[in-house]
Length: 109
Image (tube, rainbow, N blue to C red; front, side, top):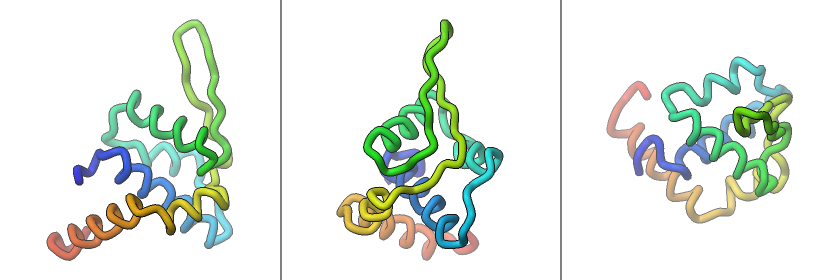
C-alpha cells in the first residue's frame, strides 16, 4: 500500500487520535495540521470529512463559503465507533501489518 493510500492515512489518523486519547490529551490545532503535511489538501479534506461523517472522529465542522467548502477542526477526538473500527476492521488490520512490515524493512521509521 502506498503511503498516501486512503486507508493508510485513515489508519494513521485514527491511531494518532487513539494514542492521544489514552494519554488523556487532545491534539492541538498545530499537531492536527501537521498530520496533513505532504498530502494534497483536497485529498486530506476528503479523508477528514468522510471519517467524520462515518462517525469515527468528532470535532470536524464543514463550513461553506463563496469560495467553496472547508473544514474547521476543533478538539478533534476519536469516537468509540472509531476505536472499534481501528481494531476490528479487516482493512485496518492489513494496513497495520503493512506498516509494521515496512518499519521492519526500513529501520528508524
